[in-house]
Every structure is written in structure tokens, then in C-alpha cells.
Image 1 (cartoon, rainbow, N blue to C red):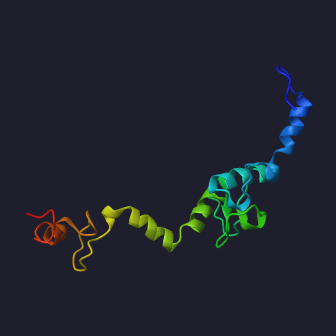
Image 2: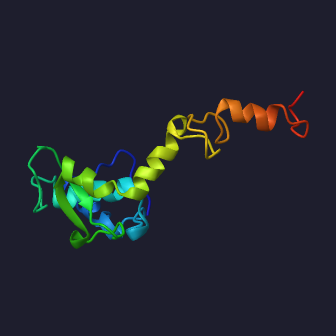
Image 3: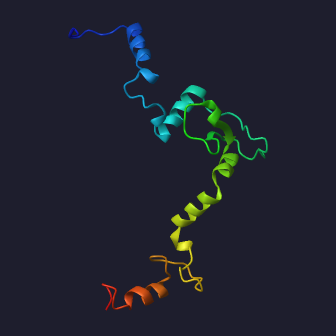
Length: 146
């Protein structure tokens, strides 16, 4: 059945259509396969903004609150997988030894040379400039060498 040209739905009808196409009924619904940002939007929409820190050991430093995924949980739409934390507690919870290592790998200029006895910071391929030149530039096997 085609719509009449110029026909407009009433406000009540538009509201019913909107409600019938939300959540799991929507053609865009991805369930637990939704991306990080989509789940965070869903959380704020359904549970509201966080307003307190649920950490028992909170020092009360921060007045900004965030929804945080509990350790060793997956992103779902289950309230038991999340907790409200202040920004300070959220950071302490998220920054583990593994994330510290990943952060330091991102800042390559601060890592030391692969040569164990050398303490200089590396610049290229894990070597300081001195060792890089010795290994790659002066080596006749190196294609770019002289």
C-alpha cells in the first residue's frame, strides 16, 4: 500500500512507530556484538549517568564519576558487570602491569637499546643510533649500506 503524497502521520502515530522500532526490535540491533561506544551510550541511556563511587577504598579525590567495567568481565548489557567509579578509582583499576607495558611500548623513544650493556634510548628498530649504524648502515649485507 503506497502512502498518499503529502500525508503526515499524527504525533501519536509517530511516537508508536518510534517505540516499535527501538531496542531489540530495531533492524540495527547488534546485541552483545555492539561496539564499545554503542554499549557506553546504551548504558548512559538506560542506567543514567554515574553519580557516586562504589569503591569501598575510595579516597574521594575526584568528583567526576564514570561507569567502569569490572575486572575480567566482557562488555554486555548486564548491570552486574559494571560499577560506578570516580575517575581516580577507574584509572587505578584499569592501569595494570600489562597496560603500563603497552603504554611504554607506545613511547618508543623512552625505551632503552636492545644491546643489554647499552643504556641509551633507542630510536630505530630497537637500537640506539650508534648501534643501529653499526649493525645496519656499515654492514655490507644491508641493502641501503655504502
